[in-house]
Image 1: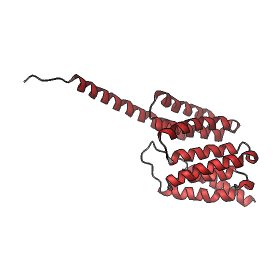
Image 2 (image 1 turned 135 degrees about the horizontal axis):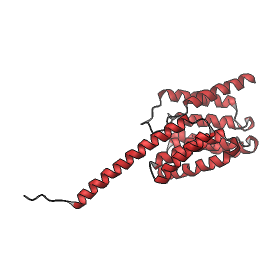
Image 3 (image 1 turned 60 degrees about the horizontal axis):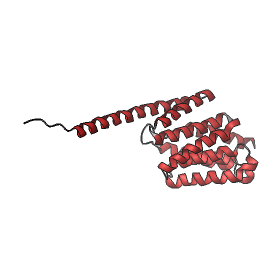
Image 4 (image 1 turned 180 degrees about the vertical axis):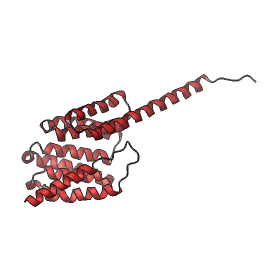
Length: 218
C-alpha cells in the first residue's frame, strides 16, 4: 500500500515544534534576565537589566512576564536614582497598564501599581501624600482582595505609609504592622514556578529594621 503524505499536517507539526522551541528559548532568556535583575545593585546594572527586559518586550517573548519585570525594574531604578522618580514610575506605569489589559485582576500587578504611586509621593510628601497615597492604598487593597496571601501587597502598603506624611495618616508607626504582615506571608508564600514573582522578603526585613530604628529615635 502506497504511503500517503499530508503536507498540511507536516507543516503544522513543523510549525508547532518551531513554536515550542521559541517558547522555550523565551523562558530561558526570561530566567536569565530575572537573575540579572536580582543581582543588580548599581544604577548602571539596573539600566542594563531594564534593557534586557525591553528586548524581550520588543521581541514579543513572554509578554506577561516581560511587562511585569520591566515595570519592577523601573521601580527599582526609582528607588536608586531618586532624582528621576517620576520618569521611572511613568515607564513602569506604561507597562503595568498594558499588563492589566491582558491579565486583569492580577494581585501582583496591583501591588506594583501601588508601589509606583507610593514612590511618587516621596518626591514631595506634603503636596503628594493626599493624591498618591489614596491611589496607592486603593491598588494595594485591591491586590489583597484578589490574593490575601500575596506578601508584596502588604509590602506596598508599608511603603505607602513610609512615603506618606504623618499628617496624612502615614509614618513609621503605621508602616510597621504592614511590614510585619508581609513577613508573615513570606513564610508560607510559594511561587508557581521560577519565573513568577518571588522577590521582596529581604527588602521587607531591611525596611522593617529601619522603621523600628526610626521609632526608637522618636
